Image: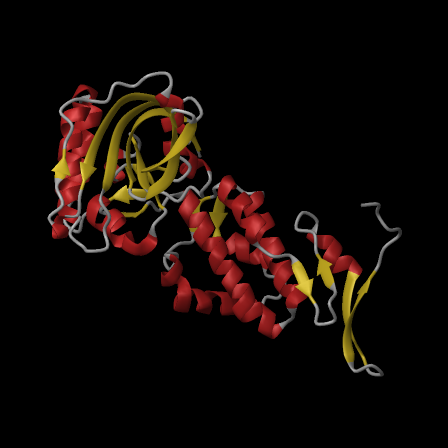
Length: 352
């Protein structure tokens, strides 16, 4: 979990990076930008809003041979070791970005390199480096007084409600390649930012493992439990899986299977499914890991707990109390109507 609420921008360098393949230039500012009380709040909202609105999927710097060969890893390590050099190193970062800007689809734009303080990640206070890029220009109107009338002047500028690209590199987990959050609103050149400029891999922490394992369980429920049983049992299986994660701090696969698999015949099916599909979720060799509570909360929100019937009726089951669905909902077959039915027991209707 991150907290950007008290984040302070200590330093801001602004440069412009063009498209190298189109012979567009690289403009490097000689000095940092002089921040003031008017512009700073606007920039903080412009830079940080996309990170507050998205899931915390972390990355880390990587290299096929060794981290020392990752240029961005070396640049940010230089800055963290000597923050007073952030502006000079920001020029190197922009030169590196310019070298990667050689595809015709890549747009030129302004690049903002910031040194940030008073952030927290996983309840640890840290400093961070922000690299943000604005690419898409927006038309807007300015008005000028001309004698007795107002004249419209068409201009172009940056929409402060939409950051095109950005990353926050936390001074945390250096040995693994730092923890990094990144956003990219323009998907036409996704490899350029993540792979070519940053050169990152997914950070496989407890948040990543919890999300991936629960997604694996969701697909197992859809591909195996649903065809073998019915929609009710698919929903109930995911109920039990989510609740197991919610009440435990550590995941242990044997304990999970013994608690969640009410039908023991599904245990070998689950293991076979993991052999076949586990690599897709990066869990093929995983049977123990710490559980991330925020990841469980996010997963619970996304998992459907509704049985949708072809008679335009929905039955919504409670994730918090799944035993109610097992005790008070029965499925059967009506010979006369030649239709399935659900029988629901209750004492009284609740007021909505």
